[in-house]
Amino acid sequence: MIGAGTGALAAAARLAVAGHRVTVYERTETYGGALRRVERDGFAFDTGPALLHLPAVYRDLFVKTGKRQLEDVVELVQVDPSSRHVFADGTRVSLPNASRAGVVTALDEALGAGAGQRWGDFLVRAREAWDRTRRPLLEEPLWPNWQVLAGREPYPAVPHKRLLRTRRAATLAEIGAWELRDERLAALLASHALAYGLDPRTAPASAAVLPYLEHAFGTWYVRGGLRELARALYERCLERRVEFVFGAEVTRIVTRDGRAVGVELAGEPGSAGGTVVEADHVVAGVHPARLSALTDRPLDAEGDVRAGQEAAGSGRFTLLLALRGGREAGAAHRTVVHAPDADAEADFLASPGGDGPPSPTVTVLRPDDPALRPDDAHEAVTVTAVVPAGADWADEQTVRRWTELLLEAAGTAVPGLRERLLWHEAHTPRQTAQETGAPRGEVPAPALAAGGGRFLRPANSTRLPGLHRVGGWAHPGGGLPHAGMSGALVAGLIVEGPDFRGSQ
Image 1 (tube, rainbow, N blue to C red):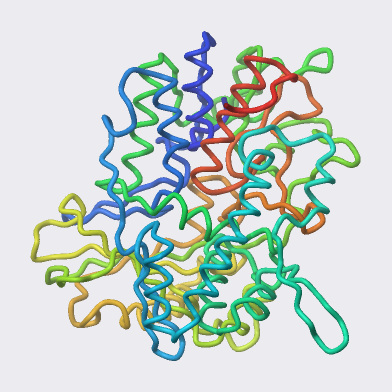
Image 2: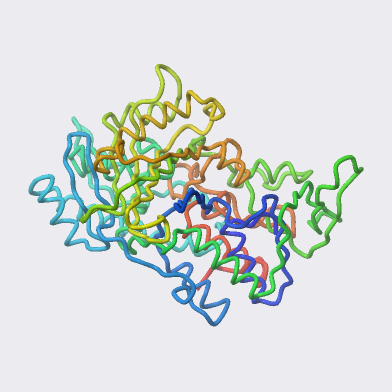
């Protein structure tokens, strides 16, 4: 196993239970991939994902790999309200967790009569898209005839008459404009795509499954932060006698007779070569560019889904804020402060430059968790925005500019933020690249149907027998639920063989 990210840990635990001897080689000194934690002066912060959706993926993993279930090893807390939104015109709304009726009522009260019903009707159509795509995109290996997924739009868009033509929404932005018919509802919809670095103007209508997933299965927080989920996965692997070698750089995938038969590890400085470790199967949880560098042959044939077909290049800029003063009553766990100019934000992410970044959409996380703060007279807050991964994140001026933009936006969600600030620390795509190995610190999005296949991820199996791909850069794409399903798919393909038809 190359890499100790979430998908790799999920695969390792399942393979070990199936009787395989599993060794994980991780080039850094810890596990978890993007699920990292920063601790300082009694404060603790997640620097990667901070909320969990579709926890059933990890409940299934723990049920099938040991006696203790997920809730026995971490404390899951439903976040309610699921989110609070501050729109560009100053309108605010709090959306209850996993309650369609509650969301409809809240939107009607905040945005005007009819707004909630339009969103509720959209969720019904999004559910149909979810039902059509859930199995092929989450629970089954990528179909050999994946073109069926690429060309068929599963979202049942409402016919829209424009001039003399009748059209149906093909992108998320068109759903917002033609079906939701409110700039604030459109911003609410777009924020779910933007959170994964997707441009709502080009993301297919099938991306409607992203807000539906959150609505249907709820928003969950792991007490102590999501790093605790990574710890629980790691400890489950140890219980199943998975071996870990940290600080181990894999430099080559060893092949023999047209099959992957092991890995070569970096040798000591000045040595002619490294140690070769033989294996029956090699599972790589790394970025496609990194994987290509480890092999001496193409891993995909002409006509296969290729890595990086969709517009890529988005990363995360996160500010870790240590605040004096306790969290006020009624504070929301998650607040999304929407950009004043959504088009300007999308234009900049697609083509950085010009006069510099506009004010971004910002997510402010304020968990009410004593484990993250020195005492109740302080608060730990994280503020995150999607940014171009290719910017010069070693440049102090770039970091300062984004820091100021995020602080300005976060001030609308955190009363007295500037006066309460003890210190702050920036976590940029540069740190993400160091932690995950992804070039420029890019973050993968979930696989989506339609869009000509540009939003699919390469299959877990490769054209090199014995080599499999796992994690966010492989089918079914990025996000914690998808990474967990990736691990289940890889384990199934290895244990049951190429005839494996998917998780049950």
